[in-house]
Length: 395
Image (cartoon, rainbow, N blue to C red; front, top):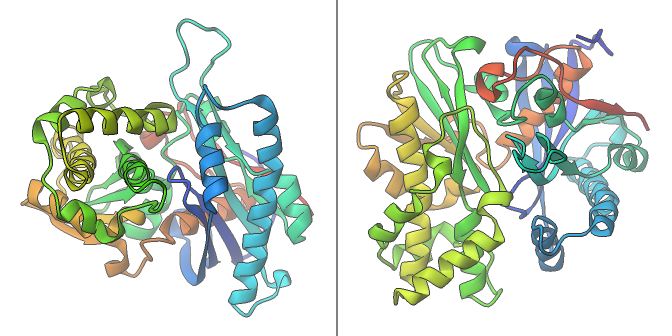
């Protein structure tokens, strides 16, 4: 462990999150009292900056082996840092605050590739992960200290570098008498099982598979780029899912793999979605049926993951959904239908913004880094031991 870099009892931290959905930057200004599992977090302001279409498509290319390049990765590392800095400054201004009011910026970065298991054939493709958005550039542009690049430290002690959100889920959502399943639906879906009165060693978590990723890309392709997501699930609601195809898609080996496990665009990205649309078109499905099938697939990956890996292990009273998927009513209805014994709610109903939750969690991770406190859960990532995740860049 490192020693504490500060001893602030109360801090104001700007958490930045840009997820695998590649939809933009979420900024959460959070007042944090204390540190560690007893920390108290209050969201002061939430601000979101969408990526423009050109950047979003460029990032999709960067997340493929066929279209990426070393010069694109190199340049994008700094370009995104500039965008994160602009978003940070705009978020602070929109909150009626000054940058000097912010003690720390904590940035997740933009994941472009993730190798949780390594490659048995190529010895150079070791277990690793890459998030872009250079910390030094972000610190210099904003004039604030920046903590980021959290995932590699977890991998260095035997973990998969993901999921990291369960640490914050434990702080924000543990309950003395209710078992809760926190299901985030961003580009990738990830769940955190919190048994009643859970301690760190009791938490169980894993990536369930694609969240909005396949749905969004299918909508983009079917609309010729006019739409980037299915707002409210309205398009899917007009169609009927091809359940036979969904069952075939669930045969992917990722879903049978035992946790801890994590995934990303390297498995379920642009190429996977394009193949899905091609298969559904060949089967004669209408556009609404295709979107409904993609939505049903995401719902089933979540509910089958619950039934296979969570429910046999701990009692769950309610499923709490966050992320962009929390706004997709068709998706939520499908999850509820497949889990009739559960109360399916959104994190917003419990006072934690559906959209801001992960940015709030990364604010907590950055705060704990500064206190020199372990800020992950080995029970969730598979790490051999607890450690402090993150790196610090000074302005």
